[in-house]
Length: 319
Image 1 (tube, one colour):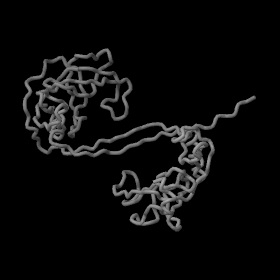
Image 2 (tube, rainbow, N blue to C red; image 1 turned 90 degrees about the horizontal axis):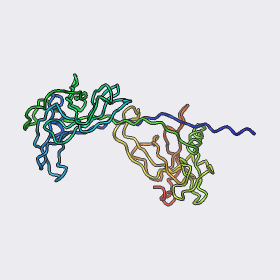
Image 3 (cartoon, rainbow, N blue to C red; image 1 turned 135 degrees about the vertical axis):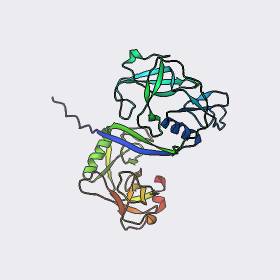
Image 4 (cartoon, rainbow, N blue to C red; image 1 turned 60 degrees about the horizontal axis):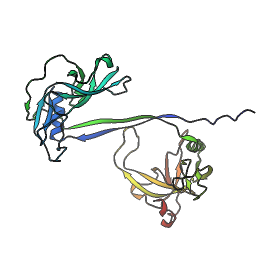
């Protein structure tokens, strides 16, 4: 007897990415500006140690510390690990070693890449020096990497006033996560139903709550859910927020509203954008319906239905 064909397993590559912008205090500003000028700065802790990279508050006493010290561009590897397959955005595009390097004059180690022909060429205790990037902007990447070094220990180090022309006052770091999403049985059915402009959840056989999107199990009772239930398409705004910052690559004018919406028949609110109404008129209890665009696999947004607002008692458990 032939076995039934296995259902299609959905998989999709996804990327979560955003630029993280932060301002710099006097210590971090001096450190990064110094790298631009091929100068490595540390900071003196209250116990006399020189910390590289520098921090603004003592890790032991939590006191503010600002006494900057220049250290050498040479140092010693304290520990290492071989990276046989570099990833996007890493310092080198060929296999290299991640190393912790205690620079001459420092008492703590700095993490960076070591350019070496292979793991047999790397060892704890080996001497290395900084290879500076040709184009330096005031970032940790101004250190292109470390390289093996046979020279002597770096010369005298001493106090530094941290003063540079055109200091770096802020940085933008790109945070990115690449992953493959496999939705599983329950969410596969949910996604396929959305292709037909339907919203399908699953009911718990114990507490009888309907979860949308379905999770394959009830988070309260811990039992499997298999009974599929179509909900909506209309629903009620349970709570919301007004977005005033425009997102990169998102063609929506600010301000706009994102809301939690309890679809009729569902016991879990999902979130979506509200449009078709001025942002300052969106409110809890507002009755809404989905708006689809041609070829879309999910609603573009929700708009008011024109119905009277829902009574608070009908959705208070979903706020």
